Figure 1 (spheres, rainbow, N blue to C red):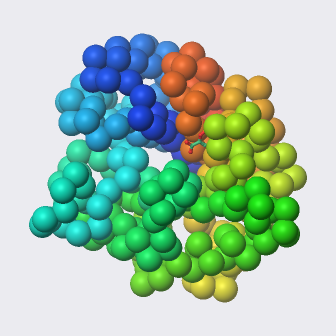
Figure 2 (cartoon, protein in one colour):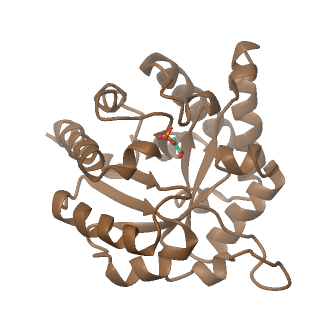
Length: 261
Ligand code: PEP
């Protein structure tokens, strides 16, 4: 659906792999993944390993993402890393991941500030939204996603929206093995595009990039790739296995090539 029908596959390594392990992993993955013009592959290692991987990575094969960032550019914010410090090292940043929202209690306002900081510093935000199991049980999914979208995108212009990717990640599906059905994802994808249409108009609704994330693996990936409006994945656990991750990338390539024919 989005730009040129390209797929985007993002591997979120979370708090896994030290510098040595990350370097070995990247070496292995480079040997397995073919570079396709149909798929952009983005790796999100920990902050600690970003700098060294940025020197090792072949940017034609992979791009790098920060798993988070702080929205102030500099100052007395112990332990934080700003978008201005990440500028030039990463091309993307994950913002509003459910673990940031639920474990670290980040609000839509924090998320919005981070989206703004990323854009200000030439980094493309991957804005994560998703409902909890309780919200889903109360039929509040579309409501919650609407609030998170409006909250995260406030102050983003239509031009800036081109830089943003939205990742639908139901909280109950992350790291649980309980992935959403393709019908769930299809319904939500349509709802997100409809909300974007209200906010930014028809063209933006058709072109904004939407990913699915939540227990994606090599067996269920192909199903989501048949949904025309799903532009790829944000993958946690399965991205830590180079063979599985490269297999999913190959599936995305096949799906994108089939559409381009
Ligand atoms: C994630 O970390 O965003 C994620 C979707 O994890 P997993 O694929 O393990 O569910």
